[in-house]
Image (cartoon, rainbow, N blue to C red; front, side, top):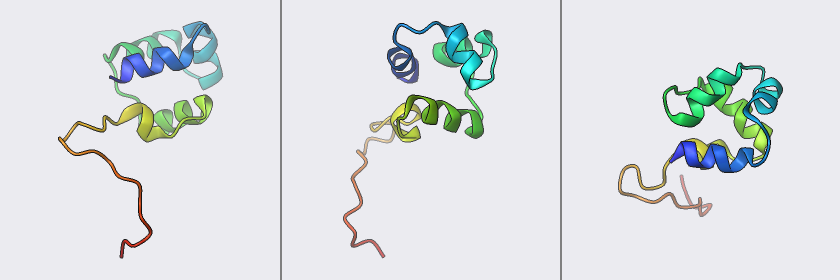
Length: 77
């Protein structure tokens, strides 16, 4: 779940500290972490860059459609 991933990435940092770095309110970050709000693509990207984690690893579930993502093999057309 996204909320568990975000809380784990935040670690010991406070929501206020991370929110300030991201340029959002603590309330907005809290709502995203709790699953009450979905971030815009721009904010999702900011979060991924801030934590130095690919956006897909935070906001997409590998099992959401019953299929696991596979790394590109270099043979795609």
